Image (cartoon, rainbow over the protein chains, first blue to last red):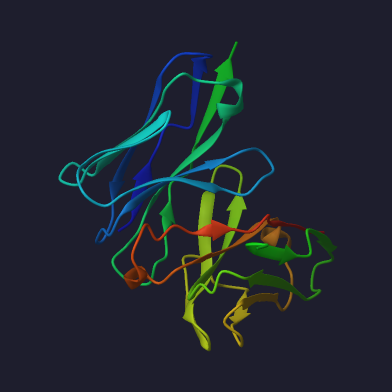
Length: 110
Length: 116
């Protein structure tokens, strides 16, 4: 079966650090993606992990542990514009398609 | 480059009506996808295509048909719309998995469909 879990909502303070977790149980694995989606807009790509470890890209980092079926997205120096939904998605071995979690709605407060 | 475009942006249908959503990409991507997004449900894959002339079913294909006659276009059809198909529809495209680099999907702006 396919199951991807993320917290539904999170709140954090401007300037702080927040970690959004994602756990998955899927039939096969060929990479994990994080997307950002602002209200009323399309998802945009943030990061991709296919091997264990940390990938850093500016204020955003993503971590993967394949043996634990676990990933997190770390956002540093939070800004108000980071208020958005963050989507975790797993790529099965064939076809390029993605299986998405329900998304985590992050609210950044002043 | 326009990236991924979708038409129309908004549409209201009555139950039983039909319509076609058009997706176009100018990135020469092999793969294309149609998703629907509903509150609390995340993005769910309807149909996808790994090349011109090929299509495959995703998680929620019932009530929809697709065609990929040209590499750059992917059409989603609703033959007899139902209120349960009220949703936001996103098209996406990506390189084939063997093309190298992160095979991220690029999304269009979405079509907001209401079925009364």
